[in-house]
Image 1 (tube, rainbow, N blue to C red):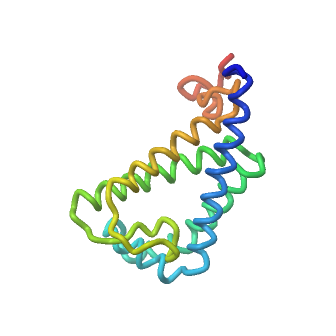
Image 2: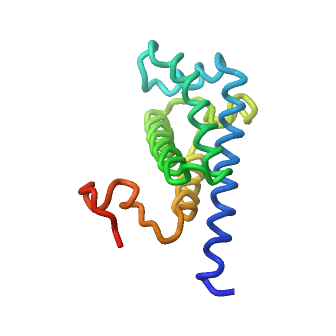
Length: 157
């Protein structure tokens, strides 16, 4: 099987796995919003007034973006949302590790082990970002989703 023939299959696999992970994580967080709010607060990045709303909003965004990937509906938008969330998650993890904050990830709600965060979680999120790149629909460069090169509104050919 050539690379050209294999790419659509790998893209489908990447988007279903990545989307499924985000649906799973979002549902677990949705089922335990108080515990998830505490996990967010443990990172010490946000004012307390934003922690509760984020604990309620983020799981829904994760589920919707994940379903977009799994179902192939609004695929580019789902991938962009997931990639954006992963960037924020990586920043949160790295700042917590750098500041010596001893907390669990909270990435999969309270279902995960309560081990303290570390570099494996950062590498896992980077791997998920790579899966998002692989899941991007073939033949449509990422700049096309932003309206063309430098956001000019022109499409890339």
